[in-house]
Image (cartoon, rainbow, N blue to C red; front, side, top):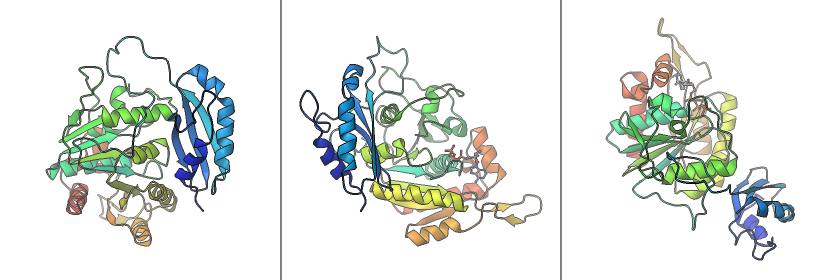
Length: 358
Ligand SMILES: Nc1ncnc2c1ncn2[C@@H]1O[C@H](COP(=O)(O)OP(=O)(O)OP(=O)(O)O)[C@@H](O)[C@H]1O
């Protein structure tokens, strides 16, 4: 039997804090993740470093309590603390902080009708390419579209959408997003130098995501497309648990290894009760521009067959072509122009709109 979040939280309610109360009533549990294998990970976040140091016994007790829950195969907890408050007002809006507690269940974002996540199991299958092109194609169909690059460790939307400018903030609290190709967009990449590395742990990532979702002046949107990092990590968990998503689109190449990872991503969305709106096969066919020969470098049809097998819609196949890559590198997505790929994206956008998902 799979471990249930409610049972884990119930067990954590039984772990008392030295000053009274328990981990759950004190709202100190963050990033609770349950792997399909039954492995459970979570963060215990103390208000300050001194308190965190005094809670080692509580951490061990929490791991012990969770490991007794039915379906749990292992439990690992990490202690963190809020950092000291920043001195004085920041000169510019700064993204990256610990998340603030959120009351109630997944939240709706004011003024945003739909939130659709674009996900993949494996890296490099073209998820960011699909997210940017889909956003542009939806905008070309007349929708009000936002694009949030939540690929916090490897943001590529500033390059793909051609917006490397730093967004401004009038009050150091709210961020004014950027605009390109008819899309309102925001990426953590716009807040960093291009070659700067982010060395953040789970809570900082979750705080950054929360800021990007709630502190950006998105305005009224028909749809916010969220470009997720590859895999099944903290950002995916936080997004699905904290916000009401319309659903997720999973991108894969037809290759077996990519499909295997895509299945894991689909399984994760199932566990998080986030609907999978459909699968997309990227890098499907390659037509030689010289001789017109059609080749299937990563296989062909695997994603459609998988969609049929797990009974989710197959949203379409996108060609592997040089133009798509060059367009992404140049900052004008291929969907902004005309041609085979642009048509495929337009069709995809219409299908989503027709199905009430765009
Ligand atoms: N259909 C396509 N035809 C040609 N090149 C493509 C296609 N799709 C994506 N690419 C190229 O493949 C590379 C990887 O794509 P992209 O960054 O979108 O993948 P990703 O899945 O988002 O990767 P990451 O793991 O970094 O999140 C990019 O250079 C992109 O231009």
